[in-house]
Image 1 (cartoon, rainbow, N blue to C red):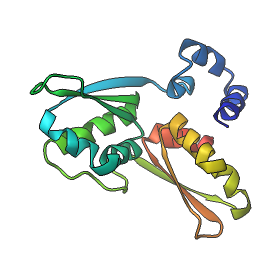
Image 2 (tube, rainbow, N blue to C red):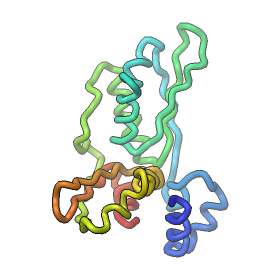
Image 3 (cartoon, rainbow, N blue to C red):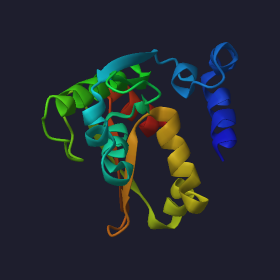
Length: 177
């Protein structure tokens, strides 16, 4: 399904082929959004705090910011680990702030909108929400990955409410998709 989304977007954007040819593995670049990578030093004793139980904290940070976060732990004892934060520039800025606050002992954060983020509510008829989600969540996961925005669907409402949060550019890209 992600391939279908890319093909549809190519037809819609025109320039997408040129951008994808330059960097075929960077969906944000293909949407004309600037991307970046930021490295943060993490003391070895705080790695567990960043990852969280079962990876929940790092997954939450990624969901809140829309950036991709990895930790390189291939360092000798006592040497700070490297946290790599990559994605759309705005998403990386938000994730960097969240990670740095966490390392300073601040709260992990909630699923609410943080300063610098945007939120968009979109109504979706119940009879088509399955197409948005896709088989096994494949379509919605692809949209989140491509745009960097977090997409949640409230199935209890009729019509369903789709909540899109993240960097304003990411939210706009997801809303257009």
